[in-house]
Length: 335
Image (cartoon, rainbow, N blue to C red):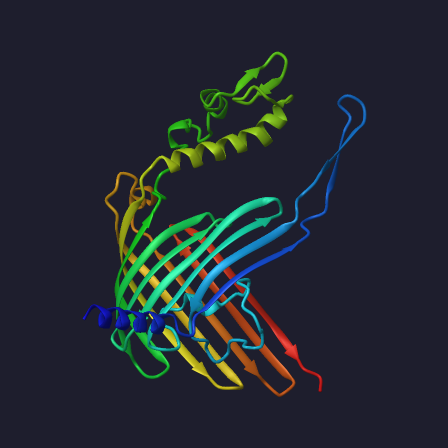
């Protein structure tokens, strides 16, 4: 009996990962060119600001059926591709699809960690999805689950409605609110002193909490050191808080039509109403309800065997934070 159970489990495991692709790749290149900076404070001095090379390390596994318009010409999958349709509510086929990808990226000297994981199950009557997204460049990170009823109008168009739950940092929390003055400015020098910085006004010297001289003028102090201090402070205060759970109503649609000369793929999800009763509720921060949404459009038209046009893009707006990608263009093939 035990042997039979194990055998069946192995068969199911192989079925789940059948047609999936595991990939690992490293991509890199030079960043922006070095910049020479000149100073005449103590005679002519020259400094060179060097930016290290850019790179991307991608690790992932995916099992997502390709739509008819997606390019199949590339031999290997390296994780740098923009698969716009990954954001759609439903895939090309019924059943289970998934994506797990981690990207370690350095761009213009700044390190980012990006992650996108999701498991999606699509049936004729319902859609179940769990997703985790971390976009270091857009400064957004959340875990989302959704359960939706799906109404299929025809083979091309479907609507869905249900509920979504999101776990994230409290985006309704403003760490600088307690330091705001009546005139709307921030008492940044006092905050810096509380964080361990030291200021010698008479000598115009400004020291970091480690005792390092970081500025010798008010201009450098205000334009370079203070912004860094404020960023470090807000990140520190936000990391001290627990994540919050947000419940939302979600409405959406998917439309897909494909021929060899013309194709359209469009989708959207809208969250018009939310329940968030935490201490740092975004509803309180926003002074009322707000609208979260995401969507995408892929449009292609081959006018002749020589000439074709395309438009592709997706847009996301959660907690009034936006991140998006788009491209459009013309192809002309000469025979």
